[in-house]
Length: 555
Ligand SMILES: *[C@@H]1O[C@H](CO)[C@@H](O)[C@H](O)[C@H]1NC(C)=O
Ligand SMILES: *[C@@H]1O[C@H](CO)[C@@H](O)[C@H](O)[C@H]1NC(C)=O
Ligand SMILES: *[C@@H]1O[C@H](CO)[C@@H](O)[C@H](O)[C@H]1NC(C)=O
Image 1: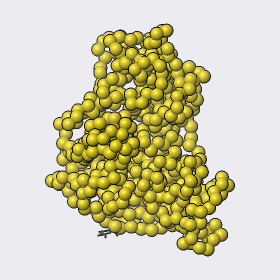
Image 2 (image 1 turned 135 degrees about the vertical axis):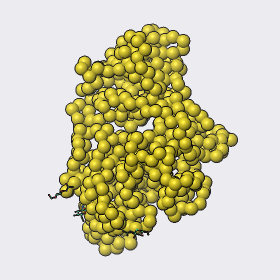
Image 3 (image 1 turned 30 degrees about the vertical axis):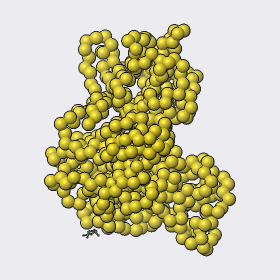
Image 4 (image 1 turned 90 degrees about the horizontal axis):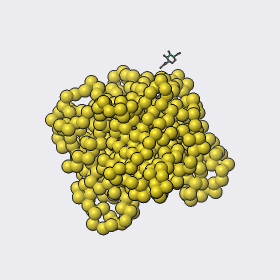
């Protein structure tokens, strides 16, 4: 078993009395190999935050804040000790290309030194940045990114990069569960094909646990950092009763296993639930089968590489106060006739979840649900996802907003404050897709080239609701398009010559037609109802630049 991820846990170093430690009492290791270390400290009163980045290299070092862990939208500083002296600049990235120098240099260098093969860069900035090209630091978790090179020629960083989520202003190191019980869901010496991209799927049975337990932490177990690109762990419905291993997205009963329980992407970390909550496992009626999906990136197309990476689930028999549930809300996963047109730069799709109808399938009164975390999920064409919460027909909040969605970087968004879904509230999930380079329509489905539009809502106390989806009523759509041939509508959409006008009409029509909602659980209780997509407000921006997890709206 590898232990590198233990050392990844945020380490708390109390001030040792040294000058620097009082200024920068917090410390986090940013990478699994222990090459990149960050210390920081801040002053609310002076509105300053000071960072000290130490990297095991004599080349350039880069550090930044990113909306989603990727480059796009990131606020970056790059510096180093070069032959002609020190260099240091504030940059911002607009995509996966070389970052651009900010017009306003908001970071100030305090010192830059090179010793023992390490570069140490100390710098500060104001917490509230009013520069459009910087990211505002708030008391919500933020994705820190790092990269470095072997030389001072600042270039593409290939593998020496990563990301780590840290709450800079409310730093709360969690204790390491070294002695906790865990179950491993891992590949077993899987021979990674000599292909650039390969998705391997393995359905595994959970070992029998004596009675009910709570799972509280999921940790990645990575055996080959250069091959494992991202991983997803899904739970299966009761209908899945067999283990299986095959290339993903090639059919089979495992396809029903798509309730996301854990995700890991390059540079990602463990996910842990708050101390009062756990996901029930073991005992009666709980998911016994899980599907592990690993996306392998074998860049060098090497043959004969083996991998046993996966996820480690920590559990306890000391039951916590609340059972955590996961509801997936959004657009029905395989809506008949649903089409995202090609050549669209930003096509919006919608799904409705009307919690008024939870009571149709639940024998007991529905409680208020406390949302702790959200995972947004689309496939490759997804660019933005927003989840609106409506009460009595009015939007009162966003449960989550990701304006820089990246399939390869998806992760849980922990809410800075717990948000409440009251019985009767409506949830609208909006996904924006870019199909600019596609030739045919994109349909909804399980393949990565199909699309999804889902928000996995992690909440307590658990109720017996799994899916809360909707799809446009295609009979009504056919009529609204002035057609009569309902069966032929898909063929019509497939062969249509799309232009920007017809794309806009299609988007508006799909949003306007009545929705057929479905709410179901794993006992096959379900309810069907009609509903309408409610209009979502513009994403509010806080003073200078909007922070993505706390939008300044409170429920
Ligand atoms: C849900 O399904 C279970 C098991 O099939 C059944 O006993 C129960 O009555 C159903 N509940 C409702 C509200 O239909
Ligand atoms: C919605 O409005 C009705 C009538 O004003 C009120 O009785 C009800 O409590 C409201 N629902 C919620 C969840 O606030
Ligand atoms: C949700 O369901 C309730 C009860 O049927 C209904 O009054 C309300 O209009 C529905 N909301 C939407 C957005 O369809």
